[in-house]
Image (cartoon, rainbow, N blue to C red; front, side, top):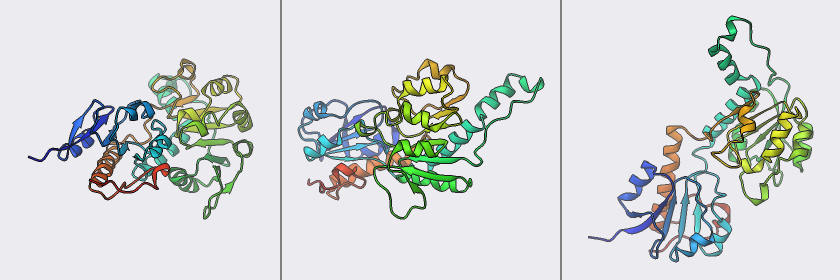
Length: 313
């Protein structure tokens, strides 16, 4: 009987990943020599130099999700270890959720639901809400998901502008070289940026102030991109009007001050959380590992690792 290659599985059990890998690999939970592949199936485990030191034969880390700030990709690349993620298959789902969250925040849809359930409608009509009409939406991070959100916003007949590391060719949206400049021009800031040191607290008190008292912040990127304490203060002081948040700095812990506010919409990081999309993401984790061990190279390597070649048996 041929001995199976060991693959370490980190995080909560994901049936598609575990079943997809079990036919080909020996699935292990503890780090040891001889492990060439790791499947990161969620959770909050940091894949850093210390963990890599316990895996001397490591060649590939396949992570579930498009964001990979929990993996030190630069350190992995330095060691010749390829890191993969699961882009594209979740783009439409997250873009749909972002638009829903924006509309729910602006039109106070969760609040309206609570209004009916509490019997208030029997006594009086719900107060009028603000609108998406005639707003200018700024997107922080015009990558795959950002472009998909912008496309959906085009159908809403609103102006879209953006900020990122650099202007992009072939997009019809105005580019702002600074985030502060974008916030000064827009009254909705939609955060789609990934996490990490480069984006940590990019949305700070100055950016929130620039949005203005009618401003709305929506975050479907990473919680660390927003200075959460500054956001709480801006909401409490009515520096901005409202916020719709799918991500937080210290998930799953949400500041009690945010929970206490009725003029914000809070979601439990469900941007890609449909059965259909999560299955596709999990399958891509499996496919990346199979491709690597077959010597075909990674299917969806992160940018830091695209220069690394195919695995050799």
